[in-house]
Length: 399
Ligand code: SAH
Image (cartoon, rainbow, N blue to C red):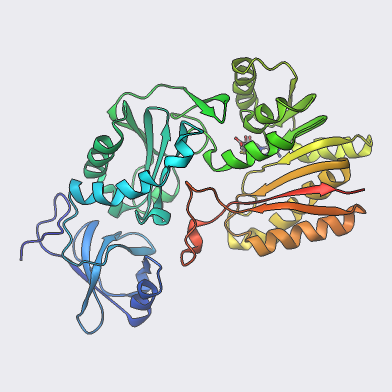
């Protein structure tokens, strides 16, 4: 039989049969079916397949990843969908349109947040006129040319870079590389984020070049910043830049000298002279400042994910609690702490529990000013917990 679904290179209609448990996951709004719930595996290499339940009823079409624990990712409930460039254009257009309000204030934001935008395992970030994509499964990798064509016709970028140098690709049996897919992409792109400018590094910066997911928290922190400010885990200074417009003095701290070098250039780009760059370990720095009984009016804690796996959650919580407790003690009266966690495994309830435990040890009276989940351009789908990882709180020291 000839396939309408065939990815490039696939000529036969391939099909998978899934267990009742697997079928239920789709019915309940989760696009993943695990390898153990696939009763009949497609014989083809990675690509798209039709999926049937145990009784032979077609459920839809999915991306197929033969080497992965996540074997199938639902793409379309229409089992006869033709996954050509036009299909991808139709799928991507509403995701892109949804970002319109973000685009009025910033020229860098996420256009496609994988499963959060019904494009499983596809990330696309926009940096001014350039796009950076990540193809995170063997199934989606087969559609790279259709996806690049669709994105090119919708966004008309000057270049598309694939930051496929991520470990998860190894689990899919894919190479980990950085590859130019279309046009040209500069080493650095100037981002404008609500009037603050910074340089993103698409080829070799963290993630796809910058941390786009904290844009709104940076703006919120900037709006409330005052006095003496401290930005721990600063990377290239993105929070510090926002804080510096209102605070008198800002310390931007990071362990990475390279990140701080870009932070220095970012300060110059904004004409800021009140940011002090400190290369240090945040744990040590906070401890020393606490011993010295110093006070800060604004503190930002935006650490890397301490809990990389479920098994590491309890030791991660100790780390989060330590820095948050020290930061709470360092706050001046009326001072505000902006604190975040990007660990998927540290859920919002665990994050709040950790903050309450730190507050209980701090001997301070602390009030929540606000809690945040993810910004509009990183949609977290209620039925897909894996689309959510970022949470943050703003906390004021009342006495
Ligand atoms: N706040 C940044 C993103 C931070 S990413 C932004 O909004 O752009 C986390 C940063 O923490 C990285 O730059 C990493 O170099 C730094 N880091 C990791 N461990 C650290 C430690 N123990 N002390 C200080 N910085 C650390």
